[in-house]
Every structure is written in structure tokens, then in C-alpha cells.
Length: 312
Image 1: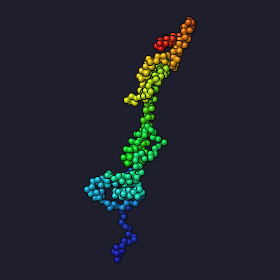
Image 2: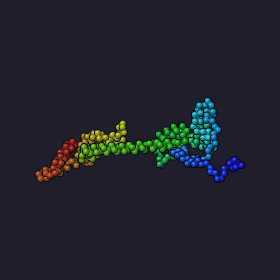
Image 3: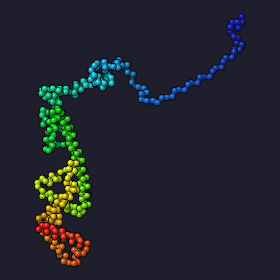
């Protein structure tokens, strides 16, 4: 039996051409990378065990109690609700949470509650701790006493009352600072206006007004100095007020406008000054008749004569 018959290919018989090996498959391109986000980052914490609480745990617990269901809605999970419960119990054990006062508390319960909160028995026993070294003045005491009585009726603690009094003084100080700035701005505007109008007589007119008010009945000057319009403007700084007072002062005491500051000696001062001018009038070469001061001196002479006649 030949090798062919035995099914074996003799070594010297060539084998049929085997198909050429195919080229290696071209790899498909990798998908484009997606932009990363915080949500895509791997967590370094182990995955939490699946929750055994149903999604409707709030409804299941609250039942038909809508108020309770609304309270449970504040918590994102049962764990958050348990954490809040434990925190509240810890505060109670440390004395940080105290029993509130009931709506219909008896006098004994009210006294016990106030003692527990450090609230004094009467409003006048509050020990205030004010900041910035503040001290309650005599003028403020009636107002503060009324405030303390009201806060005591609301069972306010000493810290709460002190904070309220501090807030009151902060508001008052702020209002006073703003009013002062407004007063100064208005005063400067009025002064600029009247200086331009009165010229060299501005200071004399202001002195005459001061003298006029000094002769007013007791307390009248102070009332006028402190009086304000409805919009808060000081009346004494109004240009119209100062014009009127200037005119009034000149009519009541014309001599003061001519010889300010002379007081009871105004008549003698006028006589003396007239005598000096009259000496110059007798000399045709004097400054009364010639020179840059001649016009002013002649006008001064007429003022003195007019004031002297008014005094008579």
C-alpha cells in the first residue's frame, strides 16, 4: 500500500498552494473623549449600600397629618431627620434648649420661666450691658424705662434688651450726624448768599441780630435758635429770616448800626466822631474834601447826623 493509499502525503509531493494570510484588521478609531465634569469623577468613597427606605417614607410616616408631612419635607433623607433629632437631644442635655413658656402659664410658671432665662422680676432690675461706653442720660431715661417695661412684658432676656437699647442709640447718633451735616451745608449756603448781599456790613448785621436776640425775654433766643421748619431746616439759618432780623434790629436800635458795640456810650461816641469830622470839614485841603476817602467820610457824616437825630 502506497503512502497515498494510506492517506499520507509523501514528502516529495508538493502541497497545494495555501491562501496567503490576510492583512491584520485595521482597529476602529476610539470614540472621542467627552468633556469631564465633577459628576464624572470617580469617588474615593465606597459606594453606599442601597437604601432600604421607600421613596414615600415621608408620606408613610405622616399619614394624614399635613403639618407633619410639611415638616418632614425639610429633610432630604431619613438620615437627615435622625441627625436633626440627635442634635436636638444633645442640645437639651447640654441645657441649650429650654422649655418654652406656655400660652396660659400660671404666675408660678411665669416666675420659674423668667428665673430660668435670667429675666429679672421687674423691668427696673434689668442690668444693661451697652457697647461703646454708652450711658443712659436723664433726658432719655423716661423713654428707656418705657421700652424696658414693654420688653419685660414680652419676657425679653437682658441680652436682648441691651441689644435693643444699643440699636436705639446707634439710630439716634446716625440721625444726629446726618442732621449736623445738613445744618452746616445750609448755614454755609446762607452765609455765602448774605455776604454777597451785605458786603462789608455782613458781620455788623450779624452782631446786631445777636444783640437784638440777647434783649429778648428769657428763653426766647434759645427757642429761636433751635426752631426748625417742617422739613428740618434751622429757621435761624434761613436767609429770609436773617434779612428780616437785620431790618428789625436796625429799626429798633439804629444807633447800633452806626456805632456797633458802643452800648450805653453810643451817644457820646457819635458826638466825638462828629467833632473829628467837623474839624476836617473846616479845612478845604483835608481828606474830607479831597482824596479817595472823601466820599466815604461824607457818607459817614450823614449817617452820624441821622443816628443822632434818631436818638433825640
